[in-house]
Structure formats: C-alpha cells, structure tokens
Amino acid sequence: MMTRTAIAILTAKLLLPFSFSGLPRPIQSRDHLTPQEVTLVQEAQILDQRIDVFIKAADRRLLVMRGVDAGSAKQLKQDSEKWGELPTGTQAELISDIAKILDEAITNIDDVSARDERNPLIQKALRKLATATTRIVDQLKPLRAQAKGDVEIGSFEQLMENAEAIIQAANKLPPPAEKKEKGKGEKSKDKN
Image 1: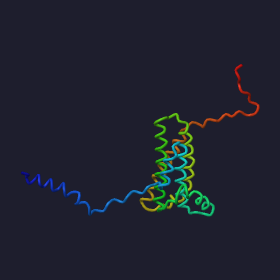
Image 2 (image 1 turned 135 degrees about the vertical axis):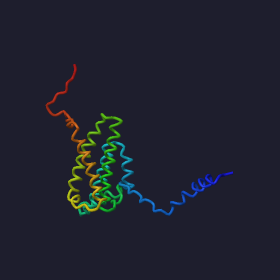
Image 3 (image 1 turned 120 degrees about the vertical axis):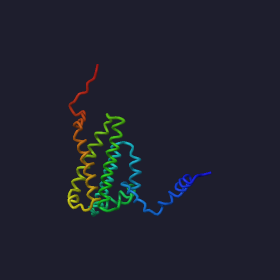
Image 4 (image 1 turned 90 degrees about the horizontal axis):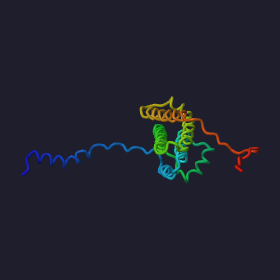
C-alpha cells in the first residue's frame, strides 16, 4: 500500500515532463560552418590544409559583409561546387561565425601541439592563420566602430580576443628556418 507522499512523488515524476512542454524552447544555436565547409574540414587531415579551409570559410563571411563585386563573382562561381552557397546571416551572426572559426582553428592547432609539439606544421599553420587574422581584423575595423547592439558588440569582442590570442602566439614563434638550396658554385661534400 502506497502512502500519500509516495503517490504524490510518483505523480510528480510522471507529470513533470509534461508540465514544461508549454514553455518556449531555447533558440537553436547557429552553425558557424556550412555543411560543405564541415566536410572540407573533415577531409583536410593535414593541419596547414585544415587551417586553409578555416581561412577560406572566414573570408567567405567577409565577402558577404562587404558585398560581392564583379571580380569576386567569378571566383564565387568557380568555388560554388566545392564550397557551396555563401553563408547568410546578419552582420552580428557573420562576425560571430568568424570568431568561432578562429576559435576552432586555435583548437585544431592546440590539439596537434598537444600530440606532437615538434610538428613543423604547427608553426607553418600558426603563421598562416596569424597573417589571415591580421587581414581579417583590418577589414573589420570600420565595421567594429559602427557596431550596434549587445550581440554584435559581443561578437566583435570574441573575434578580437581570438585574433589577439592567435597573433600573440605567432609572435612567440622562433623565426622561420631558412631553406638552404644548393645553388650554382656550391660543391657537395663527398667522402672518398
């Protein structure tokens, strides 16, 4: 025989899931990469190639914000089969996408570094990412000054934090090793 308390608890457990069904559900989070871009990231197993995909994805969002001109329209047509349609969204959403793309690029570099800190692709990828990040930030500076609303300002702040982390990490790298090529007049050392 069940007591009143036990019946009340059992009833509450059974009815609890239904009591919240009338509440509004949270808005689903926006994906910062398109499905085609996700596929390209997954296919790019080598770090510097994966960073190239992230850079191109960020550049595509910049293009949407700046507007497509005649020169970029031709490139877009060539890229559309591989990269798909350009992403859409508000300026705040596109800036947030870029911030998240940079964050994902940082995570990828960190993951490779954690597994093999001597991997030469880490420095190459980080330098490439820092160069692109500097270019992206320079292009977005005029828009940053005009940012309106908490969401857009927050997106810019996140973008700037990620950009600063990338550039600071790249500045700590040792100078790139110079490749020595045998030129004319150089003799190879043979052991006879």
